[in-house]
Amino acid sequence: MPDNCYAVVTVDAANIRVQPQAETSIVGIARRDERLPAHRLSNPDAENFTWIRVTLPANNMQGWIREDLAQLAGDCAKLGALSTTVEARVDTAGTESEPEPLVSPPETERQPATTPEVLAGDCRGEVSVTAATVRSGAGLAHSIRGVLSRGNQFVIVSIAPKDDQGFHWFSFEFNGDTGWVREDLVKMTGDCLNLFTHLQPEADETPPPDERPSDGCLALVGLPRVSVRALPTTASARLGMGLKDETYGVKDITAPQTDGFTWVEIDFEGQDGYIRSDLVTLLGDCAAFTNDDRLARPVAGRITQGFRPSNNPSHHGVDFGTGGPQELRIALDATIDRAHFCQNCTGDPPNYFTSDPEQQRRIFSDTNWGFGYGHHIVLSHRLEDIPRSAQAQLRRMGASETDRVFVLYAHLSEMRVSVGEAIILDTIIGKTGNTGFSSAEHLHLETAFGSRWGSATKFHPAILFNIIMA
Picture 1 (cartoon, rainbow, N blue to C red):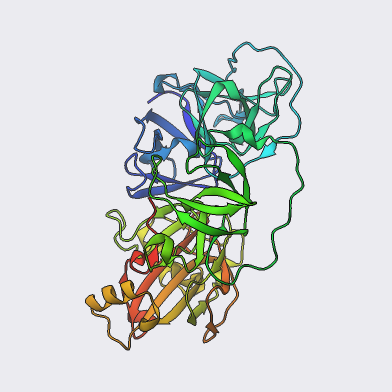
Picture 2 (cartoon, rainbow, N blue to C red; picture 1 turned 90 degrees about the horizontal axis):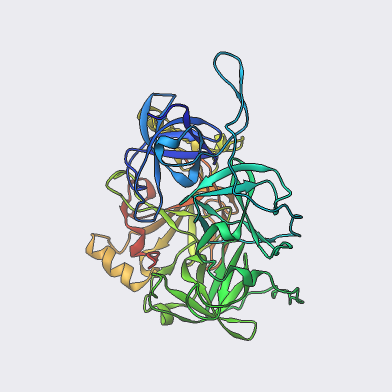
């Protein structure tokens, strides 16, 4: 093991897994600023992430943490990576240990850039040089915060206008703070290949209408900002940005493109525009575009855990990473079967997460934790009211004509309905959150059929919802 090499956790909670793959089981949870002894690096996985082999001090177990959730610190040369210096610390002997000196590429000092443009969505940077200096602001006049080695990836938060040498600077989360790196030291991936079109002259914006169209197929933006493109590819020009809770009339939905995504064609400021399908939620009658009568996915965001994966067969639902609270609009008339208020979810934090099986069983049987679901809502539908394709499949699975179809929305931050209430299509029932047995902002979606929720038969939500995205 390399001497004095650590992985410092840079997010609130990071999963430590058995193998360097996201679908493997969790051996523990590490919290922000926790220093984990680092042993070695993996090869890039299918999503091009490198993983760090670490030891959890709490239980002395070893596992893997994904590189974007931690930052190497100390003497990590034997790992084949340069380290990022963190703040001075006090060692076990009680003497202060100074940070390792930083080696920065020679650069000419110049003034910091002006106000940056804030971005959002799937935009990443990857270090393309041997060592990239991370600074406290957008320019060489700012102090050095650390160094990233080749291949390190990060989410780009904002881009600063060009400095006096003609360079843009990108900001990102770095050791719990904001770091800046110069554009010529990184390459960009994701939905930012034409990133600099964000920096456009200010123009008058027409506020979105207060009312949503009452019919047709609509695309609802769920993230703070998403790119609207001229063509269904991230390499095309950006026409502008769609903002959270804006809706656009859908004109078509493409087949999967070369980037693996389907794209939604919309009417954007009088011209045709395209938004990636995983960044919006479809509302209304969209069957003509999808050739699918299933209900639209309930929120925008990536699927972070599927239905009964091999490493967690008791997970009878689908998880969507939401990146923050999103409103939940129902896609079908329903009755509220449950609206469970989680008594233990009112504190800070409103959640509890552990890898200990005994503690998990305790939470899953505790009504004060919402049986692990936190604040949660269960909708009840008549079998005859759900899409015909789902009716047929559930009948083949043994559903009777008197059975109800239940939909659970879990880990909510807000509930706006009460038990027994009859609600109609497009009603907002609450907001997604991070309550109960949960380690991050997400929506847990479950579906079942039967006479009552407690004894109902669980089935894959993809039978009822069009949630499988290319």
